Figure 1 (tube, helix red, strand yellow):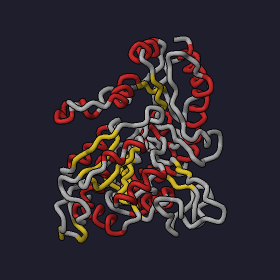
Figure 2 (cartoon, helix red, strand yellow; figure 1 turned 180 degrees about the vertical axis):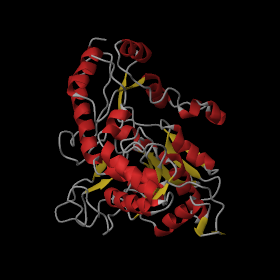
Figure 3 (cartoon, rainbow, N blue to C red; figure 1 turned 45 degrees about the horizontal axis):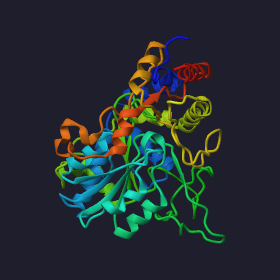
Length: 411
């Protein structure tokens, strides 16, 4: 068995090579390279896919989160010094977006089993200065819960989704009482324009399934090459149902301009280019199929890795693997935990299996956040000390998946 890459981007993109080259050539031949028809097409298709009212393409996923928060400040919803609750174990971009806007991140521990924000620890972190909860659909699993939605309603908080790792993930609402519909048991009622991912885009009414990125008030998305929907460079997007927020975000990402050479805000240049938009449009058509292949890899890992020193991820709910999209985890990553993490990684490297750690240093222990270094988050620190990500992609062969399992079990 040859070396197994953690993520074979060349092989992933080779699947769509002809369509990608055609899309790129179309852009080159058009002579229009920014804010043109390709962006319009991708934004429309992504809006329909996610189930949001608006999509604004931006330069990257970090910018997407920055512009959401900045827009809320411009709209008077937030002001500098306000607090945003965020999981302590997230990738640092979630926190960077908060501090970039001179807002205060309030770190809250995750659930040790799901790695998602612990809904039972949020309320005690809420203060009069709290203005939002940022949930991070980490590793590709939905972080939203009914309780989080109820807290947002109770305290009038914005719900912001960091959907960088979970494009295509679906939240399935609890079944309503007999006869109860119209979104009454969803903390965020489903609007009439919502589209169901499970009913061939027929109008979505009442309860059912929502894609992450359409659950809260706004969401940031990343199209970094390694993401489930990856560009050939950086790229990102904001999705929202809020007309005013969408308008302000689009202006902020275009130098602060709503009208050419007229600047309402002190914005920046943060735009998705036409080439990236065109190829993302190509790959979007295959995203659900690719995510299902990831689930199949994950299912085999979960059912066949059997080692006393290795903790497998807890999938909540586990349904959705093997065909149904409902309640689906998109397995951007497949994280395992072990107290022998470094030893296991060396062993797998020697056997030709590439792994990565997500992430070796917790955000509150990073040098850039010296003011947080004194904080203690035992669960977060345990995850960061024990996590190891196994190879995961839609192009792994059955032989490769079986080989990874066999080698891991022999550790």
